Structures are given as C-alpha cells and as structure tokens.
Image (cartoon, rainbow, N blue to C red; front, side):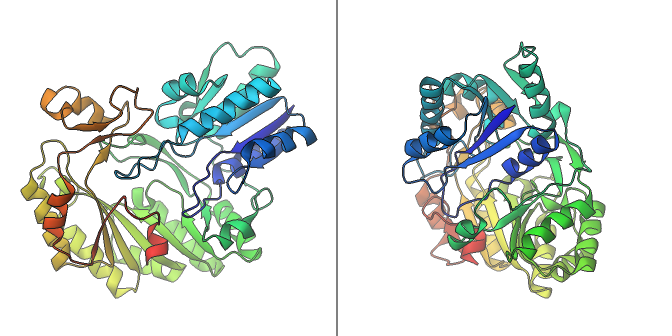
Length: 419
C-alpha cells in the first residue's frame, strides 16, 4: 500500500522538524508500506506542491498531521485548523483520496476536528501501533470505525527509529530550528488545563534513543530539544538516561522542559554533564500557595539555586489567573521571582480552554467563571477560547517594568532563542 504523510505545520518561529512523522515512516517501512513525505513547512504555494507530489506519486492513503490547533497564547489570534481544512478538502475533491488525520494537535479534540476538517479517519494519541491497525483494516475493508485510540494501543518501546532521511534538516537548522528526541510517552501530571494530563507513561529503550541522537549528531546537527511532556516525570528513569548519554559522550547541546518536582541536586549535575544548556520550568501560580500542591516556593528556590550552581540557563513558563485564584496570589508569585531570579520568566495571563480538560469542566459548572471566557465561545473549541480574569494592565502593574519578565503573546520566539 502506498502512503503519503503530509506535514501541515507551517509555523516558522522557529520551524519544528516533525519527529512524529519520522517515527511513523520507520514503523510503516518496517511493515512493507511504500511511504513518501510531503513537507509543506517551507512551501510558497502549498497547492502547487500538493499537485506536484501527486503528479509524481499516486498514494492510496494520505495521512495529515496536525501538530497544533493554535499557538495557545492569548494575543496571537491564529487558528491553524482553517488552512488544514482547506488542504484536506483540496486533496479529497481533486484526488479523491482517503485521508487520515492525526498528531498531537488532533489528539486534543479528535472528534471535533475530524468532523470540522472532513477527514475519513482519525488516529488520536500515539500513532505508531494505531496506524498499522487502521491501515490493515482499511486494506481488508474492515475499518468500520472512524476513530482509533492510539493511547490504548501504545507503542513498541524497544523499536529503533531511523531518522534524518526524510526531512531537509539543513533547511530547518538554517531557520533556527533544532532536532528533537523523545525518551518517553505520556504524562502523570494532573494540570487542569492540559489535554495530556494523567496519561500512562511508556519509557522508551534508552540505548535506542541515544542511537537516534547519534545518527543526527553524526549528520552534523548538534542542537536538540527534548519532546517529552516533561523530562522529570520519573527521576530514576531520567537520571538513567542522563548517565547513559554522558557515557556515550556524543557531544550535543540540548534543552528540555521539566516540572518543579521531583528533582535533586544530582539531577542538575547530570543535566550539566550531559550537555543540557536550557531548562524550561513549568509553574502554575495557584499551586505555589496551595497547601495540597506537590511543590512549594522552597522547591522553586532550590531549582533556581541548582541551575545557577551548574551553569544551566533557567526559563520559567509561568501560567497565572486560574479559576478562583486571587490577584494577590498572582502578585505573590511574581514578587517571588523578582527576589529569586531565574534567567527569564514568561507570563501567560489567559488560559486556553480545550474540551475534555479539567478547566473546561470547572468553568462550565460556574456561570460567573463562564462569563470570563474570551474568544470564539460558540465555535466548539476549534478556534481559540481563553479563560481570562486578569488584564494586561494587572500584569504590567505586578511586573513593574522588571526586564526579567516578558508577557507572552507579543513575540514569536521560544525560550532557546531568547536565552
């Protein structure tokens, strides 16, 4: 069976090499599928490029990845789904192809996006095993369903992925993109705003992940960003990975996301020795003063201290303005970071509300909270909807021109570009 996989992510601030499609190519080729990639990231004329691809190759199935629904940042009023919908309709109308939707953005609200965009099938969650079952069922005329659950089907954690062959890494790096790698799937966090919360964690084979990194490093690309939800979900596993990466001495520089707990001093020492240069720490303001929170201001102090001690740049992604949170709570967190200074603090003061998340359930049970929604409220969550009980003036007053802080939504850059 001939399959085309299309990268529809056209964000270039910076461009992101689609690691998920690289994983799918490996597993499909291992199972004797004939796979081609159509990367629209840098396209000047997407429909001309689609025509050119279909003129040279006649796929039976087209897979369309949706990395993001929107930027998830208040102030950047963009919706990526509209262009993706146009692409899908063009392919179906002009070429009469079966279209499968998938990707991390699709998995946020799969039923809503499948209906809105008009795909034939959807894969939500992890695509590796799910795509094999779906294609097999299509081939046997046995796909009597529209949606397949990749979270349930999981992945082969011991599979070795061949990467670096199907995308123009040089073009991505020339525009300030960097390579990605992934050590685990899932997230044990319970963040109320997140569509990935409380997902089963699957740890990948450490030696295989490091060989993936080595292949790309040997191509001359030495900068990486971790693609895990958070790196320190399981400290024993994370430290095991770091020790192996240090032992192999590949010589990369990399950036990662982590949550405030768990951690220890040894973890930061290993990060430094492994080549980690930038840590982005995810902090929710209401948790800092919540007695039931897994972390406290003391934990944040320690993380700032260890980052300084080992020369790791620390960026804080600070989300503020949660339901029932007071202005005083937000101000206290901002004052804390004024007194205990990481390298930078990005403040997001409006929270993107996605369906099927904890925050959606909280807001829609309380009319007063529902009145604080902003955006396309009657549009089935496809276009951005934000919970916003703080104003930009509130945040500016709390920050008081301190250059440590930046309010998100005004710059199209990411932390590794800013530090």
